[in-house]
Every structure is written in structure tokens, then in C-alpha cells.
Amino acid sequence: MNKNLKLFVWSMSVLVVLGSLVGCGSQGDTHGNDIYEIKGSDSEVNLVTALVEAYAKGNNEVEFSVTGGGSGTGIAALINNQTDVANSSRQIKEQEVTDAKAQGVEPVPIVFAMDGVAIIVNADNNVKQLTVTEIGNIFAGEITNWKEVGGPDQEITLYGRQSSSGTFSYVMERVVKNDYAQSMKQMNGNSEIVESVANDKSAIGYVALGYIQDATGIKALGVSEDGTDPYVNPSDYQRVKNGEYVLTRPLYQYFNGLPSGALREYVEFELSTSGQELVGAEGFLPVTETYRQENEKYLK
Image 1 (cartoon, rainbow, N blue to C red):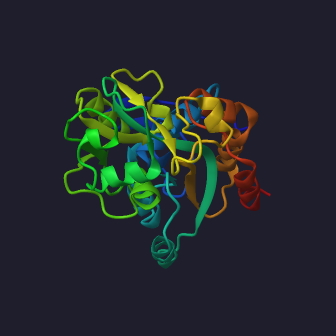
Image 2: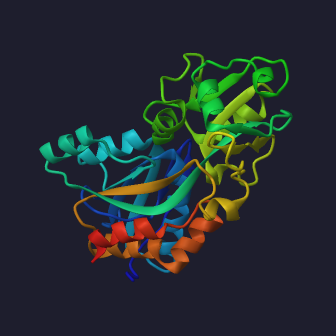
Image 3: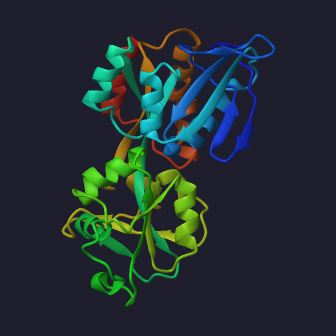
């Protein structure tokens, strides 16, 4: 493991600047150290920050910048050689791969964690569970009042992510299977959705699994595919870990080419027992065996 990593942390809006890793477009700081960029998914930014901090302990020569902005933002930056790593909560699109190759960039995916997308409502809402179909109809604007799904006689307010978000794309493709209702309020990040839902008794929103830990004023709903299978609440971490929660997805990091050097060492740390324990501590899920095997294609 590389012992030469220097870590700086500063927070401003969704920006977290840290000692991180990677290097295709790295720049030097005033000390002459390399600064590597990790950019993209807001769902991943806190988790990656924690992983980088853990990897950086006791190291002191390489710096990293970890920022959010959405999966699409990270992938676009990778395509344009403006970041070393793209955090993405969705798979890269075929057109994005084509665009990247036209720029001399070869996107390589590593799945470093798994996530469950939690459907959240205000803590005072008496609705406890919904099917995937009901959730999709709500976000499509076909169900507009809570009384239609056993709740109070109250118009539903929708909170979701902006279109550059991988979670926006995931929920639209997996759950809504149509366009979102025009009335949905598009928020810049998971934390904004949690705060908005906590302050709006008519609200429903969706966030990454790690953002419901210790959150107040909201509750996560149990979800069933169609009502014939059990409803599983994403707060039940063991059941989610066991694969019983239907709204789960892989979390990606995309690199330009096979990771090597310090970058490979960082990836190996993420996938190590210590790294995966930290993933769990942050409220996310360890990589499944299927994705571990996929990763091995790039880490042999």
C-alpha cells in the first residue's frame, strides 16, 4: 500500500476537497504534489470521502479532490479529460462510451459498493409501504393524492433529483418507466431531498441508502415489487444486504484505462475487507460476488 498520500479536507456546498487519488489530469499544488480529481455522483460523494480519508491516514504526498454534481457530470468530465475518476450511480451509456473513445478515453468500470434507493416520506405520514408500481405511478403523476394509497386526503408533493443524477435515471427507468410528472421538484442532492421531505408533510422523495441513517423527520417506506412478495424496508440493513430489497443497484467508479500505481492501490483498498467494512458503516452495501468477479477482469 502506498504510504505517500496527503489529505486535506474542506467543505463548501457539495464540494469536498480531500487528499484523494488517481491521475490522468492531475495538477500540482503549491507544494508540488499531484492533485487527482474524483467527480460525479452525489449519492457516492460522502462514501468516497470516507474511503479516501481512511486510505489517506499516515500518507503524505498525493492530494485528491472529491466533488459531487451528479453521475452525468462526472462521466462528462471523464470524457473530456477533466477528472481522473467519475463516480456514477448508473452504468455508462453507449453514446457516452462512443464519445469517450472519440476523445481518446477508454472508460473502465469498477463496482466498489452496492446501494439501495430508499423511498422516503414525512415522518407524520401514516403510509408505511408501497409497491414499485404505486411508487412509479406517484412519480409519473398518475396518483396525486395520498388517500389513493391508504394515506391522508392530501395532495402529494414530489421531490427528486436533477436530470444529471444517476439516481434520477435509475428511478425513472426502474420504477417510473415513463417521464416524471412535471410537478416534481428537482433537487441538487440527496441531503436536500431529506431536508425537504422532513419539512413537508405531503412529500415523497427518493435517496441513496446511506442518507437515511440518523435522518430525522422522515421515514423510509417498505417496498414490494407487486405486493405478492414481502415488503422490505431499506432501514432493515440485514435484509437489504441479503438481497431482499428490490430497489438495489451497483455503485460505479469509471477510470480512463486500467487502474495502476497508487490508483490501483486505492481500488484494492476499497475492495478489501477494511474498505468493505467501511462501506457498511456508511450505510451502503458490500460488493456482491457477481460484481467482484466482474472487477477481477480489470484487476488481474
